[in-house]
Length: 245
Length: 245
Image (cartoon, rainbow over all chains, first blue to last red):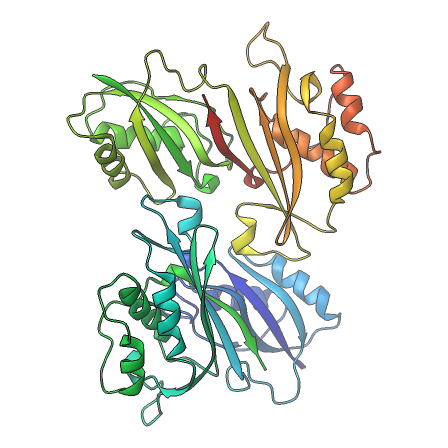
């Protein structure tokens, strides 16, 4: 038996998140494990880089699993895709290095959050973006984003994943860019707290719309005992882009 | 009572096409008429610019309907959207000019067909594009597209919509362009035969993949008694972009 790692993409709309839940709830993990079983997998739980929330999309989720497989990795990719529904796909498969763990071995994760600036609903664009009108100010949000670069205690934006864990994370990239019909925020860090990206976006948008003052992000990053209590930005604007090892 | 025209967008994935069918079949027309009834519409059938096939999307479908409405057009847009599901939206509403008919008054229609060049499934991109691998040759397809410009008998690509009707159409624009991860074909004509765009794309892709010789489009346009018998390109790559009056 060898350990394999796969890059997985999904449209999160039809899922109650990544992590397998109770019977009858459709999850990305559940659908992937069903496909794995059909190619001979006998494990009890696959491993994944991140547990995305209900509605969050992925272009570069990473999973791993042990499997006895007699053909090459490309054939395994094809066999898995033949057993997956249209809203999940395996983009690439390779044998994993010794000791590989998709979550604990990960060094950097990149997420992207898309905003659609439009006064009216747009079925094709809104599936993967948060529609806002009026449009938040891109310059203001870009200035706020700078405050999160580097190593900070992000306790204002989420809790430690395990009791006794800390909320310090290192952010390598945090920038807004204009898109054809809106804006997108790309953020890369060593790891993220639960709901952290959606809360960061919520805070920057509040500044971009003039509801919160310039410097809000710097104040929250400087004092983790303050909490960003506003509603996180909606899940369907968020996509897990890549995980680096 | 006034006549209104609305620009309508939809994600065609969950519909059995635009035109209302038997009970229990979900159509864009059916969903729009349900929303219209909830704002006081008492008509029996709305009018539309084009009857898109099952799975085809729209950014600029045009409908019209008679309605007694006491508020402004923007309020009507808002009221309709409040009664529409997430995969259909009204983008704009205005009072229609005297004698307006969304189909018969239309002078030009523009469709766009997207190709995703990728060896593996991609749930987020494939919803609105035909995935092909290897990628068809863009230069070859662009050269084929030139042959359809102007006034031609497109009988090779579809039948007359009514008995005794003709199959001559005038094409004003027909060009391929590179997209981030593939290609898109944009075509504008006075009108289109049923399945015509999907058959045009199918023929150009056959040339672009080297299965049919250069000059295939010119030969088909020159002799409408020949039929393009290959399978039309899949519906989900096609989008009705705009209708001009």
